[in-house]
Image (tube, rainbow, N blue to C red; front, top):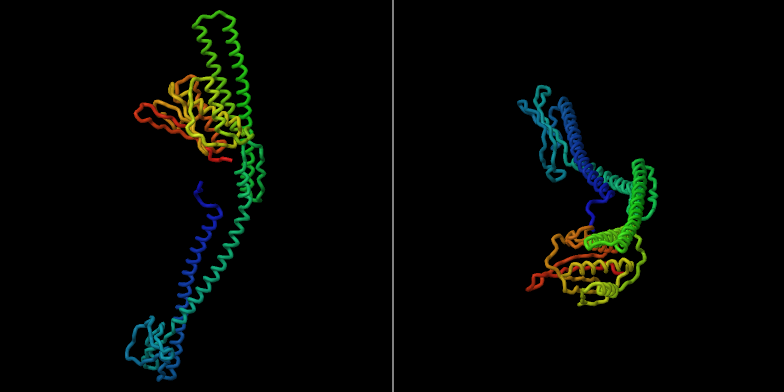
Length: 425
């Protein structure tokens, strides 16, 4: 069956990756703009510094023209507003258009107004910015990969005791007294969990043993009173004069006692299956076993049977459980088949079918294999036969099923019970 969800380590790794990538992207963006602002500030500081130097030069050399295109000096007649902006200028030395950051301002020096324009190339600062950010991201990426590897290995070691204990819990079975033997991890929370699990499993096992013992004891104790009751009734009937009405009442009591004994035996069988007490598996011919049970019913009832398919079918299981399986299926078919109609048995390579006639489909077929469920009103039906069939099938991994098909030109139909032996050995 496909499991939904994500493994713990995978979930932690995904969270680490997502958070790491987000931090890297945000850090890169913040670094880019912070360095860009810093470089722009440095460029502007350089521009003001160069402008001041030009002003000092003009005080001693009024005809100074600057160094185009980095420094330009122009005489003007009126003041102009200070301008600080970016501009594209052709650089003859580089023979290409370059991006410059420029500062332009007028200054009155020795009675003459000068327009001083100083420029600094921005391209170089952009290259520096890209280089710094790239170097930063590479370093962060390497550090992230190292931390990712370290964090993954660390998590594996940290959670290793938990997964070992989890596997031990999965293999724990209440039917066998096996201690969990959970390992210590040195982590307080894990050790507390181990302690509680040990207490819980010990309590569950103790309750299971008490319930098992109670079931066995009460089943055993019920047998004796029932046998005594039946013996007393037999003695009373055989030694005391009774009329016909009293005889019928005693007979009804004996039937009820027999029914209680049968229910008790079947409940004991269910408890034994739950307790895994059937371990003597052997290869059994289902064909021969079912035919043997059919002959026994043939001697006790007037029912007829027919076998339409007879492929060889062999299954490995406990012989006593196989006999109960066959007996309950055939008994169910005999009890509920229409009078005078034979039951049909079909053997296939990996399944067996038991077919009996009936008037109509069952009202609640999905509850057919539930314990104590019955649709029949017959006194000898206790609702345990098919539930035992289901329990045996679950024990070995077989698949029981039921279906109903109507017969053409008839008001009756066929009930088909099938056992699919999915784990043939």
